[in-house]
Length: 255
Ligand SMILES: [Zn+2]
Ligand SMILES: [Zn+2]
Image: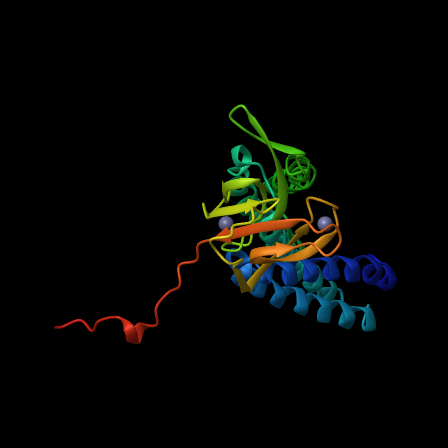
């Protein structure tokens, strides 16, 4: 049996890492619910871990803590895979690795709490876990930051930031580019062309964060036109937002 100190030394950083993924996942609309759901087993696992450190003689509490942490781990994996940047031709990998990680977490959780473990469960667990761990190496490698994005014969510079609609991280090519996951069309261009016929629009209510294409310093860019304080580069940034009307404004249906 693992000593209480070792359990804490492994458990606390693991749970802290999961919580960090959940907090960042809450900012992305597509993973918000899953991130909130994942915090429940993560919080309970932390409580059970502390309880087990105080009462190391009760073996069931340690198993319970590990089981809850496995569920939370599956959810954290799903949040991470859903929002990580992937090139358009690899986006389908999410459909494979999100459910696989959730199943790996659930199976591992079962393995921790069951008093006797059958061979079938252990084989399934081994397959699911090895696929999940492989994805931790494979996906960041596929999602490494490209220098340019090839669109037909053209090679365009790009900037990486979370999609304002779904929250997935996307490498947006200069010009008009669609989100790899939700298809939102976004226009990002630099240097912004000065137009005399139209005053510079600043739609200050939304902003995104990415490194300045001029000087490389990360900063918040406002929707509309914005300028880097460091190098003075002007960046144009536009996207459409479909604002839902409140229900009261819709015409009442007649029976
Ligand atoms: Zn999107
Ligand atoms: Zn700059």
